Length: 496
Image (cartoon, rainbow, N blue to C red; front, side):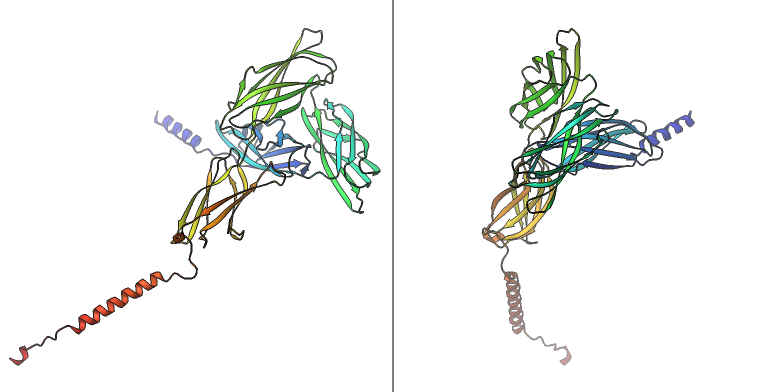
């Protein structure tokens, strides 16, 4: 009996001492720069570096904290990544037309199991660069493809600049293995005058293993501008891959939800099939942060082939809702025209809750001993503040000190330490990345008022030295006076 107990003890101890497997995370963003209105792809790769431990029930989720970048399908299940093997999760992005150029940070979150049921998780920040548009505007024909299908992709290039462009070379290249050009991948255009447009066509194929969703291909245009300089414009074009038999796709999602308010989400459904549809019921489910107001089910009487219909859902948004896409699903049930059979499909949504940064100086503390000032800054917004620069300035605008921090999270604060200024009135200027503004930068300024006895003095403060000198002088005078009054004592014992 004791032997079994000892064995059981060591078995439990072994379980308790089990450690999470070692693995490596990497990512790839295609294309490297995405234009406003374009699409791209993020691939997250996990390499299990262990030789004996599997990573099981692996799930990866990609989250956009910006209302300008949408992840069309934000979660991917990789199931098991065996020891010494690699697996990847692919996500498609869509950038809004109004997105300001700059770097947007997406967060990949993952979870997995290992050993005898232990769980662990990981996070990875992924930068996505949105670039300025050039003078060329590129439009692609709206198309849906099923796996294995071949279609012609029509591209329109419009010169929205003020002068002619010449010697255009247009190249189409794959962003992944799901959708790719076949045959001729390059076309040339001699010139496009200002305000005019030209068209080129490419033959593309969706692979037999293509994943359903928006798959990007990359279009590169090299041309000569009016000054004789060679320019390059690279843009991403989205091609929608649908399952064979898929008849309804989500064409658009428009939302302007804010924490603590009621807002409308408009969802566009498009009939991409070959027959008219009737009685289209759509019901929506989402997280606790979004409470449906009224019915969560809407009805479209019919959708003709190629037609797009719109459904409006009203939500109450929680006051503390995070500024991230909320996990949500749309379930669609419909009938063929004149038919009795019902079809049901479920589609993930990317309903985005907009967020704001609100930086404030909440406390100022002066340390006279170390001659430093502490400025406490809080973010009262519901969105994380990124790339913060804190400056102390005089009222005339002279910069006295500067400090930096990567991030102040929503409802959090940080303390910044500076050398004590010599002015009673100074300005704290807080600069941060603002994804909504055209410049990409937000600025907040607050005036800080100090008392006269709190500021640093010019030169060395001799007050303490003077006090010490005075005390020493008084002590010396007292000692000399006492010594002068001391009576001399005579020992008379020697005279006896």
